[in-house]
Amino acid sequence: VRTLTSVAQASLACHAAGHAGRLGFVPTMGAIHAGHTSLVRRAKAENDTVAVSIFVNPLQFNDPGDLARYPRTLEADAELLAAAGADLLLVLSAGDMYPPDFATRVTQPADLTSVFEGAARPGHFDGVLTVVSKLFGISGACRAYFGRKDFQQTVVIGRLVQDLNLPVTVVVCDTLREPDGLALSSRNVFLGPDDRARGLSLVAALSAVNLAFERGERDVPALLSAGAPALARLAGPPDYFAIADPSDLSVRPRARAGDVVLLAARVGAVRLIDNHVLGAKLGPFSPGP
Ligand code: PAF
Image (cartoon, rainbow, N blue to C red; front, side, top):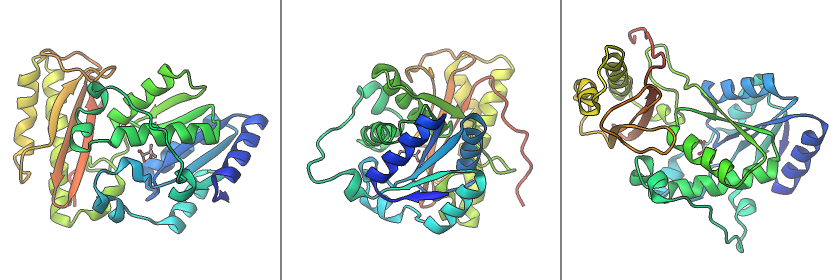
């Protein structure tokens, strides 16, 4: 893997690769796990060259403590990404991405960005939209790969590309899970053994809602009630537990196949998020150790 450590170098290398063939792009904040490497493998299968960025984007953190604690594991990341087939590794710095005269913000209306994750993390999606716009410009990639675990992120990025006619195709890939169902996340490393077990409440709640949906229930409050017992093991109520239209995140009284169940909850010191598209397969999972 060829590592590029400045925006200028990264842009040159990516645009050269994009002229020579198809360039697939996987933006990350590092702390690489199997979810990321599956995106890289998919990108490799569908493109001639794969670029991966590692940039812990300060603009999308509303909590400075969360930014400071975010895991940074560059050497291990580089090895995992190279083994998965990454060709170009863009390791970018905040000073280079946001020089003192940096003035632009990319925003979207509150109905997309101030609900769910946006309600818990004010400004988060403006930070994501701004950095992703920059990264699309720097890479010039024809396809960019994102995990469905960050469902709302995929919705706002899809809208960004549509609204601004950006010449990139957003490819959304399935969430990777541990054998017991826990969605892979860079934040899982902070879960102690008890919290790790409690974290399974999220996927258990999603599974219960999905089962009720498969059995014919369409009433949204009834569907959410089916998931509530699984969440009783958590110390407090979830940040949100809702069923939304995947195109605009609006909520309705009755659910349809393709609607998404969105869930976020604090488990010990960690905030976990997960989701499931109703009607899609979920599990079966093997019980934990
Ligand atoms: O999903 C992430 O890791 C980040 O939000 C992204 C897309 C790399 C932007 O910083």
